[in-house]
Length: 205
Image 1 (cartoon, rainbow, N blue to C red):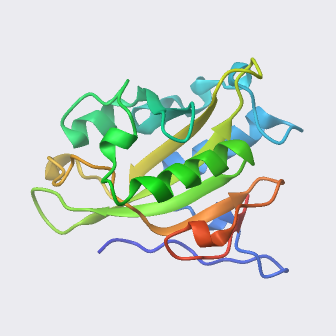
Image 2: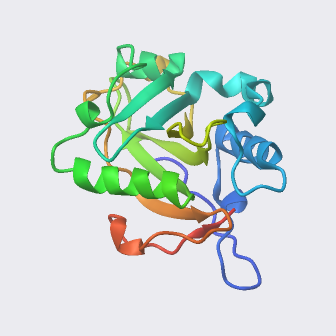
Image 3: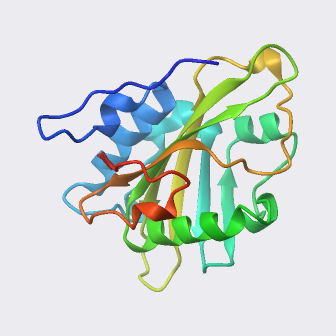
């Protein structure tokens, strides 16, 4: 098992996302997303400057939340496709979810897009060589430039150690349910914590 995230809390006892993150991709994405949104609650698509996270784009995915049943990956980075062994751009998240996982996953993603708020979690993946390795995930919402268009969830991920020599990833058909799922309060509060697999307290951005 790989490195555990941090545990720093602020004076009010609220754990801070920035102190929890351990991977460069997630740390840089958080900082860039905060720049993109400026004084707004959430950035719009036209404000996104992907050059700010250019070195991590291979670990980025963009999920378009059209409805509770229709969520399509508009972009999936090359490193994600390599670890999964196939091209995932254009695929449905429902098709990548086990039937028992989909209802909760759908409710959470709709809540992330509608409130909006973020989500932090980790997934322990098995590989063809060596022990399993955690991948750290950070998901943050982005509004469309047109208010009528679907909202998007930008997710950056990165293994906590280099897995290049450990590929392929095993059991890569479905998106696994992560550990330590935590909502990230962006300023609009968070959904009911009972939506999570374990009702852990939210994180401050």
